[in-house]
Length: 89
Image 1 (cartoon, rainbow, N blue to C red):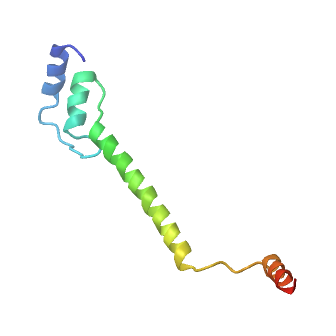
Image 2 (image 1 turned 90 degrees about the vertical axis):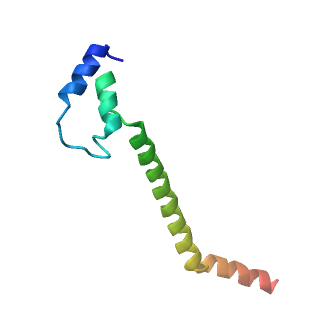
Image 3 (image 1 turned 60 degrees about the horizontal axis):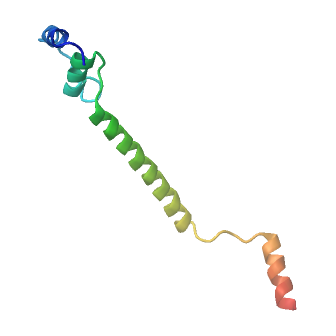
């Protein structure tokens, strides 16, 4: 962390500033910028990661559902010929 005097100075300079944004400029960003000189929000990072994971899971579910609903695939000519040869034996 930065020295206390610098942290307090940064916080005082931020008084009356506008521009709150939940993702880019929230209270955690403010606190970490004052304390470490770098705005960061672990909460936003975790939420973004969870959103990405949910998106991937939903996409996989949609693909699987589409495959199930499309029914069995059409047999190739090779598979049909192989079946015909087996039944003649």
